[in-house]
Length: 187
Length: 256
Image 1 (cartoon, rainbow over the protein chains, first blue to last red):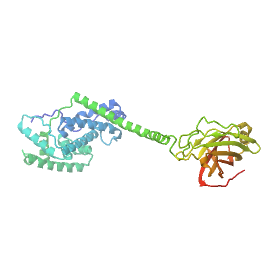
Image 2: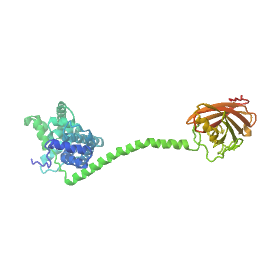
Image 3: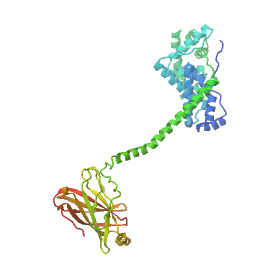
Image 4: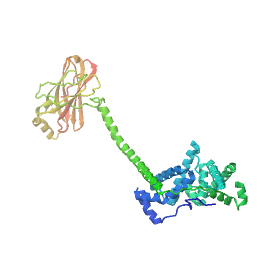
């Protein structure tokens, strides 16, 4: 099958030099616009891809990116450096996406945009997976997206979600089981 | 293809699931430069807007006590005079003064219901060994103005003939020197027959020494001789005249 991914996330974005990161992080904490802009440009593409896959709609994804970075800018002063900056912004973005998904469940689902595909079989699979994912809870959808679409390993997911490794594995197991029920029901 | 079938056909459930999910991974349009700039602008705007919020809130918190103080002053000063019973009105300016013993100073006109006629005549200060000193009524004021009665009145008095004795008195450094003061108070006719209490307060750098003496009412004219104590050279003597609710004769005390 042709790989149509325009942005293929290879897990988290590449690390920047730690010393350089510390330098502009200090400026960003002081509210320096140039440092904030650099922080945004270094992470926006990956965060946008994550939000797009989590939410399935471009406009929602852009809103989530915006909200995530605004929160991140305000929380930079409280960033303790326990994790890397990219893990930290991912966590904020995932939490923002989960909030959007929860609101969406309250107000009713919005059909996700599914790219057209010439191959009918691939279209069926994609739509079925999208529908099954849409039936999952926000937390289960998030962990599946992080694991299989963002290609993070369990340790990275644990950092992003702020949970233990065993909790990640347990949630993955439950999410897969729930997905299986929904997916088989779609076919 | 059903998920369970894929599991059986592949090496394991994890591989099958991964393959299925990867096959269904949605296409994501890369974030264009235009979209990136637009989002960045909105982020910076949102960041600035949020940072302005707490600043405005801090200003509001900082100004709240001042606003409360202004409101309190407005409440206590309006309507003038203050409705608070313990706040004495300021002495009224421009009041004529008695230049010599025997002069009668009419209390300045105040608005109803405080225009009860009350003439206050200040006479002299007797200082043992220093002769007599003329008192001058500088102004009068009314306290307890919420009450329909004009009394008690607080009458500031100043010594005129300072060189003649007051400063000598004070220059001696005598603290607690007895200064006998004659005070004559003439009330309106409608007060005749009631008992009055005249209190002499000396405002001395904030310290008020009070000396009260009760006088019996015979007609509309009372006289009292009281002894007060002066400590420093403020030169201000406040005579407050209070009205007693008890009618009839009260014993007259002379403390000289």
